[in-house]
Length: 381
Figure (cartoon, helix red, strand yellow):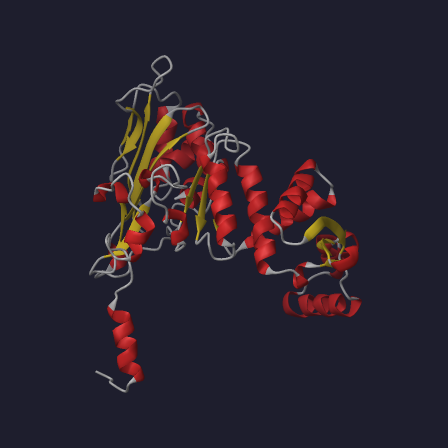
C-alpha cells in the first residue's frame, strides 16, 4: 500500500502494468481486484480514512475522507476530500483546495496511478499530510533483515554522533558483554578488491575509476564491538565474528530510537526471529510506556512468542486484550485476522495459556503429531 501511494504516479506511464500479488488460492486470481484500507492519524493530528481498489491495469476505486477538528475534539462523522469511481469520475469534497480540473485531467491520462499520488506530486496542500504519512511516518522491516539498518549505523558511528553514543549505552545495558562500539577502517584485502573490479569490468563493462569513486574503499568503515573478558582483557570483534542476535539488537535499538523520537508507525514481521524474548518484551514495553513513547508512536508486529501474552491478571499484562489479534486460516487458505476482545476475554484470563490450549483456535492442527507418528511407524495412509 505504501509503495502504491509513493510510486504509482512517478513510475511508469499510462500503459504500465500495476505490479501486485493477488490471493492465489482462488480461481483466476489475477482477474480479481486487490483492495487496501487504512485508518490513521497524520502529522496534523487529524484522523483519515483512505482506501483504493485496483487490478493489473487500472485504479478501480479510491476515496480519502477525514474527521474535522471541532475545537479540540474530532468530529464523529467523516468529511470527503475526494472519491474516484471505476470510470475515472472524480468527486471532490468542500475541503479539497486545489486545481480540480488539472487533477481530473491527470486521472484521465494516468488511470493506473492513484489520485493521492498525483495530487501530492502537484503540490496540493490538503493531501500533503496524508502523503507524508505514507512516505515518512511509516517504517516496515523483517526482523532478520537487519542489513537494511547497517548503513545508518555505520554513518552514525563514523561521525561519532550523540545517536551513536546512545546506542552504545543501550547495547551495554542489554548485557551482551560489550563494553564499546566504534567505527574503524574496513580491512578489505587488495586481492579481493582487485578481483571484484575485474569481475565488474568483465560482466558489465564497469569503469575502474567510477568503481573506485562509488565504493570509496580508502574511506570505508566497519563496526567493531569491544568485548571484555577475564582480568579486564578486551578484544575487538567485527560484524563477521559478532552473533546475529547482537547485531539484530543493535539494529532494533537504532530503529526504536529513530521511530520513538517522532509520531510514527513501525511494522515488524516476526519480531521474535532474531531477538531474545527478554529484549522483545523490552522493545514492546518502550511503546507502551508514555515516558519512552512521548509522541504516541505505534508498533505493529507479528510473533509466535506467547510469553508476551502469557500473564494472568490485568495489572501484569504487557499487552492489553484490545492490542492482541490472532490469525487463523480458513478452509480456503485465506487468513482471518480477529481481535481477542471478540472472544469474551475475562479480566483475569491468561490469554497465552488459553491460546496454546486451543481455546481460541488459531493454533496448528493437533493431528500433526499423530500423522508424524504414523509416518515414522511406516503407515503411509
